Length: 133
Image: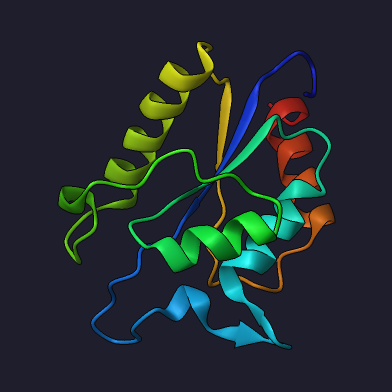
């Protein structure tokens, strides 16, 4: 927590992809992309909860291995090619606020396909958001 704000990190990672099937399980230096995202987010002490929003058991397992949680499986109607990030995030926020019985002040979306993101990138972004007006 930073400035008494509750922070949720959501890693959106569906299994189906027309162009690159199971791309979120593709490996970089032997580690699945979704696991890398979970690991980096889990290292940020300001984040209260790191979760993966997925429709795929293998992706959930890799995210859990990286330090995230998979408290729900994304419904099929939110797993197609035409589904927007907003729809996925809205579902994840509402589901987590129901599960955690709280309101999150900040939600971070951390795409697995940005594996060069560092802990410091996340911290700097949070500080700009909170302190930078």
